[in-house]
Image 1: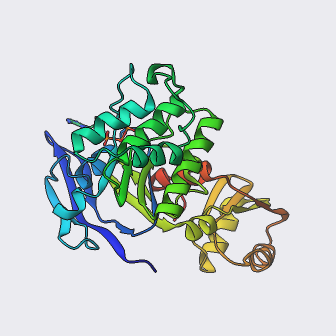
Image 2: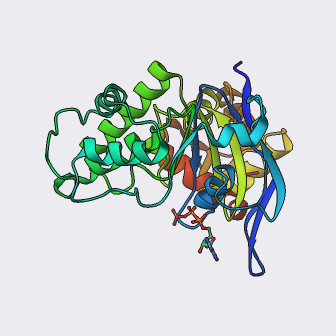
Length: 306
Ligand code: ATP
């Protein structure tokens, strides 16, 4: 287990009378790629702005515990891409980076060339940023965030609106930055499947609250699918299964039960339902995709899954 880099305690942001972020407690490990997943308006940007020091929490706190010198020291080592990247459209990729580096007092030709290579923009020459594809602009935004050689990157929806090729390029760039440079990445998206294979840790956020925090392994396990039971009377069969101690069940229709229990529960459930005199037509395992899992999780409160 890597060191915890950042920990938040009860992080809350209120605009007017509305808590747009409520009681957020997350732990980000150094070297991880931490994905914040939530629908539009869930509060991802607001969380990122708080932990990047761009806006103050109304209550609660956050600590970059793995930085000597605490939050102040951390801010100097955080690169951000939040909302629209500050790109000068009439300049080349190189000149965009040079301008920011000069402003930061750290201009160095070889360092800029290295950053362009890291984001695969090293062959764009004099081409002006205005002629870049959306994916290239996003990667230029990431390169700009790398000025100052950050240890942490906070990236708000960097793959939003990109085509599959653009998504793959940004994903490869981020994986490279994480692996080769050891940069911890905190990244948001409204599409869980887009961050799959990239993020090592996930927090699902809904209405400003974290409703689930899991590692990649835990998420894979949880989103692995469901057992679908077709029987003569799903309501009666649900009663039998609940009486036997099963709780992760959902009556999909009068003849169908979805089961989200872990482990080899099929044979025991089959026997219990049959013993209760209810005809079982079929047992089938259906794999879920990540999006289905995400939607089920964020709407979990109003479903029968317990
Ligand atoms: P999106 O992907 O749409 O940006 P998000 O998950 O990043 O969504 P936030 O941008 O954090 O969500 O916004 C959360 C809620 O807070 C939204 O309802 C938004 O309208 C509101 N909000 C954000 N900033 C402000 C502000 N400065 N003043 C008032 N309300 C705000």
